[in-house]
Image 1 (spheres, one colour):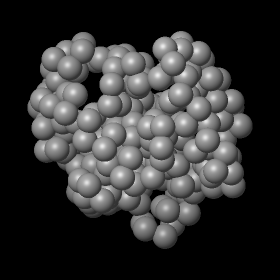
Image 2: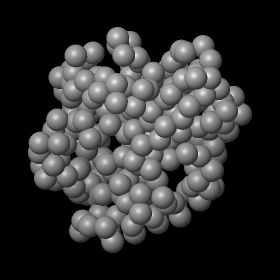
Image 3: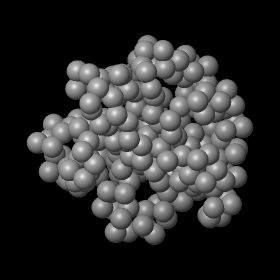
Length: 236
């Protein structure tokens, strides 16, 4: 079986309030090619940006989700046909859309586990309030028309976190090792960090899906028969 994984679209309620930066039709064409060339496609979280509202909370997040889906209705319908694991920025999709926290797929005697990975982010785990405040702040910057500045801060955060945590001895890989031992998975697929990479560990392989935000389009393919994981960027 060929499994595809994509994550971190960050589709917001308004174009100026997110980092998606794709033309809907062009993105749909790319997505259709992924669907046609794989047996199953999994969305690995942060598909929608639902935490940039002025006032926080479940009701505000649900409204942001509704507006984001209304903004790109054809894409929303296409995404509804795919497996969906929520992340931290679209946590409300668990309640509103039935998004799972994790998904296990077994084929060809191979078990693959999909989870967004924010649970294993040391900053998110130890400084949850500060992490949420930073997200709220970048939302305010975008609201004020300062999207380049918000983008700058977010990219600095991505680079610093990947350098500190993204290596084969880091917390994401350690969490993947534990999941492989506990669940018997050969592959663990995560998103969250926006940096696509794969680490071959003694217990199996952990793969990060990168991001489909900022105009980028990254797809991870797991071939369960061949026991391989590949990463493709900017498919045309």
